Every structure is written in structure tokens, then in C-alpha cells.
Length: 632
Image (cartoon, rainbow, N blue to C red; front, side, top):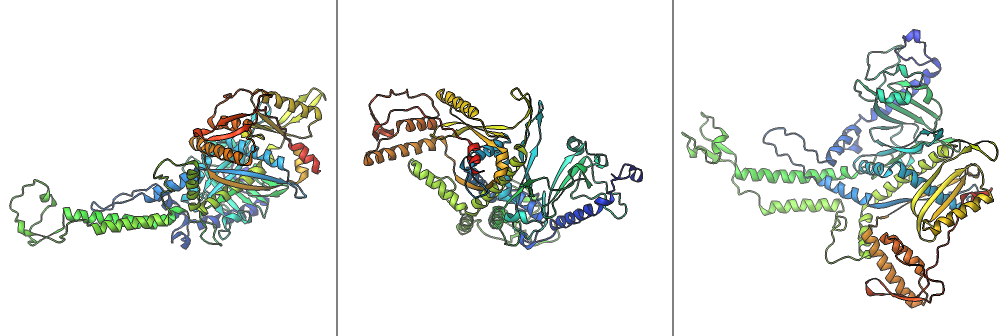
């Protein structure tokens, strides 16, 4: 603890054992910060800071103020509209995750992978990840990089910790990289990473007010103190008088982590990396970029930078057309007699001016305005723009002709995704890395006991663990229901497993399909689980499209049934029908001894003959715990 008599409790002086640590961190942060202000050829000769704001302006078609009254200001907005098209295409895809778990012997634990998929999906729902993903996508297509920081927020209620994992969006200006020659997909190789954010002093006190060094944190810049050659007023950015900056310094190779608030290292957050998986530190940050610029450069080239030059050509073409249009209406004139000064007001419509000779003026430019040839040039420029951006009727959602079938609509959507190519691959990679961080966060925090309760059987206290329920999941058997994943520190007894099965069967008979999985966290950690995440992308199916696809699928199945002479399963067809049209109990239970039925398909087409009678669905129990027990 610093000597308060020495610094009068106003200025924080690092104790000797921390001085070298703090100085090394500040030197690294200073070098990382300087990169933002250096011109770089990959940014077209601009700095990262200038590039960021230029991209931001282009993305919203910023129209700067006039430099003079005669200037023709033009922003065609083509970049903004194309970005909207890309944004909608990527956002409209079903970007999902598949998790595969493997033990120490590299044997897959399928039930565990399925259970953790549900856990991640549910935690994403609880934090409203769709909003975060939408904002991250905007940064992804407009800026050289975008980052997601995985955090854990503790929250206590009635003696239980109900905290949840959270993602925090970080822009390219809020994350500093230790080595900009390392590409983004190798973020784990960075020597150090710094995150930056600003917050009011009052709001920040709720989080760090209990730290013994909080009293040394002064809001604003405070640039008038320098003791013993140590910069005690170290700041990464500019601050208002009521603001503080939070700088988090991560270093995996050195296994160091510190939070600096207005240059003061917080005591409670100084030490080893807090984010660890199986004892090893990792960066809780995922990074993404649209298109790489070099194998030895971290930052990427977003679509907005590719579109800027062609928009500049479009804007210049339109600007010249407008200038020529103006010249045709008000051509510039020369005056033979230089002894008098004439105002341009004399050329106003209906204006009467005395003592002016019409022959005193001579046109300097004489043409009839914009010609068809010049309009052809504008059309050519626009075609160049469409070619560069791979813009076509499919991507614009233009459907020409008669009503499309489900197959044609899906094919058009697939073609639109294929045109995006690299963007889709890198966007999925970005989300994949975020899912890995979420898995590690769950392992480190959610698998801990959430509280203690009294056990009437043992007569003592026992630890309780969290559980999560995902609604609307397609369970085994094809019917939608709820999937509950619960954590525990032991295997379930036979009585407990039997009770769960009875509970599931009881709800299944009521039409509420439920599947309960149990994860033994002790067995999980002993198994040394390794994860493999796969991202899947496909167009979203709207209700109308889903219904069209069901119709096509049903008719094709009917034709196949007729050829192979194999009966269709009425139970599965009715279940999917009710799921597709979101209706319940449209079909009564068929007696077991009723003979097979014949029916007509959608649109009068033959669906199939000899359908099986509707059978009650059997509840299939799924448990992660037995799967882990088998491999130990």
C-alpha cells in the first residue's frame, strides 16, 4: 500500500514491488496506442483513427458542410445501400452452432455436446445476444476489426448466485493489439491485448468502490502531476471532467492481468489471468474482420473501404452532370466594359435593370446541358459498381415472373449467400471463437455451486447447482418441447432417474414434451473434455416459406411412398403439420385397431396410401451423466 503521508492521499505512487510491473505495462500500452496515430499503406495512407471515422461517415452517407456557395455537394448513398443489403443478407441467415465433446481418449460424448448446445443457446437468449450480434455485424462490415469480450456478471438473490455470462462489444478503437503483424484468427498468439472503455466516476464507483485504491482515482485528465519520473497521470484517451477510463491489460505469455482506472492499478484485479481453462490462461476475446489485407497484418478490409472509391467515381460523375446542368441554365458570362460592376441579380426572372446593354455580356460556355452520352457514362459507372459489389437481382430480393416454389426461393437465397463468400466464412469464424469463449466461461463459472441448502436426508448442508431450460427445441421424435440441463456434483441415483422418467412421461401425455439432462461437473472435469465447434449457416425460413417447403416435402414423400410401396408415418406427418402451421390437436387420436387410411395431399396431389395409424410418441430419456460415467 502506498505511503499516504508521502503522497497526502491524493496521488497514487506504485509500491516498489509493483513499479516495474506498472512501468512495463504502460510502455507496452503506449506503443500499442501509437499505432493508432501512424499512417499505414493498408489504410490507404491514413491512420487507424482516421480510417475508422472515414468508414463511419461512408456507412451513413455523411454529407459534409459546403466549402463555398457554388460547391456541388453529392453523396449518392450507394455505399450505404449496399452495406444495408449485405447486413440484411448476413443477419437473415440462421447462423447456428454445433458442439462436439471428446474425452481424453478422443471418444465423442454425443449427449454432452447436445446438452452444452442447449446451455449456450439459452445463455445467449438470456443476454439477448441477437441485439449484440446485430451491432457486431454492423462493425464487421464497416470497420477493420470487431471484438467481443466474454465476461461474467455475478448476481446474488436469496443467498444464491444467479449470475450469467455476458458479451461486450468492442470496436477497433477499444482494443489495442500487442503485435499488429499477427492475423486476427491467431489472436491467441498476441503477446498482450488491451481493452478500453469510458465510464462516469459515479457509475464506476459501484464496481470498484470497495477497492482500497479507489480513493486515488480522480476523474478527468489531471495532467499536472509527475513524480520521480513516473507518469502518474497516464491516459490512453481524452476524458471529460467527470469521466474515468477503464484499461484492462491481458497477457497470456506472461500470465498477467491488471485493470487500470485513470492510471491507477486496482489492487483487487492485479495478478494472474482470471480466465483459465484446465489451468491455462486464454484471452476472453474473439476478433473478426471481413477480408484480410495481408498474412502479416491484423486488421482487415471491410466492404465499405472497397466501395468508397467507386462511390467517389459515382459522386464525381453526378457532380459534373449537375455542374453542366447549372451552366446550361446560368452560363458564365464575360463583361466587355470593366468600368462597372454588375450583380448576378440582374439575371433573375422578370428582373428589370436600367442602363445595362445586353450586348455587354458574352457567354463563356455555350451548350444545351446534359446529353445522352453523359447519362450513358453515369449508367456505366453504376454497372461497374454493381459488378464490384456482386450485386444482382437475387441479392436484391427481386423475384421476376410468377409465384416461386419453395425450392426456387431457397435456391435464390443460397446463391445470395454464395455471392458473399469470404464474408460468410469470416463472420462464422468470428462467432465460432465467441462460442469457444462462452464454453470456457460456463466451465469456469456456471459449473460452480450456486449456493447451499439444507438436506433433510443427510441432516446437513449441500451445494446446489444451476439449471437452464431451453424452450421450443426439436427433441428426439421430431416434436418440439423443452430441454432442461441441470448441473450437479454427483451421479443421479436410480430412484432419481426413475423419477425423471415418470415426470417426462407425465408431461408428454399432457402434450408437453420435456427432456432433462444432467451434467456431473466432477466427472466432466476429470474427463478432460475437448471441444470442437462447428458453425452452420442457412437462410431463415419464414412461416410462408416453411409451409411451402412442407408442401413440397409431403408431395415428394408421397411419390416415393408410391414407388417403394412403403407406408408413410401418419404420426410424424401430423406432428410436423402442427409444428409448421402452429396449431394443436387438429387430429384426434386414432384407435389402435383402425385400418390404414388413404388421403389426398396438399393441392389435391396424392400424398400416400396405407398410412400408419397415429401412435403416441414415446419419451426418450437423455442423460449426460451416464455417458461420462462410462468413460471414466
